[in-house]
Length: 324
Picture 1 (tube, one colour):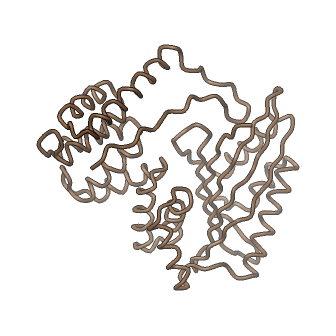
Picture 2 (cartoon, rainbow, N blue to C red):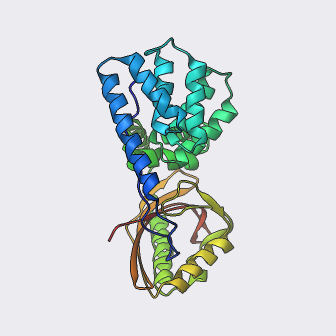
Picture 3 (cartoon, rainbow, N blue to C red):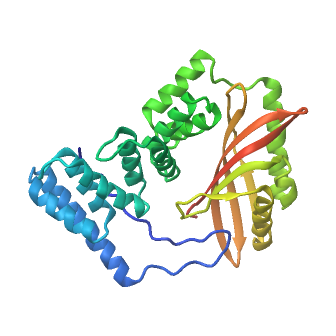
């Protein structure tokens, strides 16, 4: 098993909805991050040369210092028996350390271990929890595995949400093939023309409401008991909201922005027979206190048709900060 590629951390330089910025990393933190980057690269170079025992020692030192890459790669080496005797319990220990620190790859490895009994007893329920956390942390393989499991259990809408996310956002080839095969078999298809027209009307009204800064109208088509999840810029955790809280978030946005623009892109629509899934990228432009903040909202909505109108009963908004 190969070490996990180095992922360079982002230094936060933006804020949400014109809120004050959190303190920037101090010089000491930046020096530590840079030093650990170099140490990870050096350990990987040693690994590539086949000097596994030395690579193991280097990854051990990084892991002991709390470095995620060190934890993950140390787990990989114990799992594969490189530089040491294979030990799935120790591999899981280090994957768990990475997962508990918020690393999505570590979460996926913990889920896989729990599902298959790798270094621990099989626990399907706990595995599902970790697959979900890893999927929400943008781990593509977890999104595919979670989506496939949900779909096979009959939760087609939620399953296709994760499968499509893996295919489109993560470029997962198997997930893309799965969707293509569903569309070819007719199990996942475009909504009818009438359904598409009702959804277009809903989204056009939402777009108009946003540009009028009408928060109440923004959520008018959202069911009162809808499941709503939002991820704010520069964060990894999803927050659960109700419809009133979503309206309040929009209202606060409009109040803080001296200039505001909102533009929905074309939606990709998939019908599961019971629901309609809509995937849309929305461009948001905010001006506040002399600063311009471009945002991109990745919206996944689950809709159905009630009394001749489209309604949203599940909504996920992944809000991303863009550079000017």
